[in-house]
Image (cartoon, rainbow, N blue to C red; front, side, top):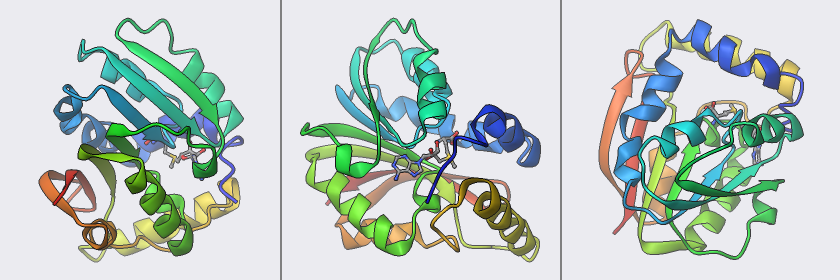
Length: 204
Ligand SMILES: C[S@@+](CC[C@H](N)C(=O)[O-])C[C@H]1O[C@@H](n2cnc3c(N)ncnc32)[C@H](O)[C@@H]1O
């Protein structure tokens, strides 16, 4: 399940092509909110361009970069040298999470590849290793808002089912799971006619 090795070399290109740059713009919109964070967890960061964007904030941070794909992780390591970030690259899934307490979390277009069971386990494990003042940046798709979102999401799921064997079957209402863990949405922005949302969540 969830093997992005095959698609990794072309993932960023395809994402840019299909969503006209909204995938990247959405991840950048609220990124600077994490500037004050010192210990940041990135799960499913992909090819690692987000590391260069974080480094550009010019704020010293320790990063745990947890990625399941060897190819994606290799590409991420090649983003170095980074000036302000000290990055611990970890290959694997949430079970490999080092015992660190995080005050920043980034899950961008990651929760959407998980089945509901995996989503619940993953989010609650992250929560248990998050500080009381954590800022959790989550950027992802929302359930279809207008008619053409539905076929777009269906094609996307079919594509990732075939190329990356993703474990999910549909876009879940991620807000519901954040609320279940007692997180409040502090701020948010929409993209692509509300198909995409980026938000900062904080504990109540
Ligand atoms: C849809 S891609 C998004 C990549 C990146 N966040 C972006 O937006 O460009 C999902 C990423 O999550 C990784 N991934 C999937 N399942 C994972 C898991 N259980 N643990 C860690 N990473 C995982 C994949 O290898 C892939 O790089």
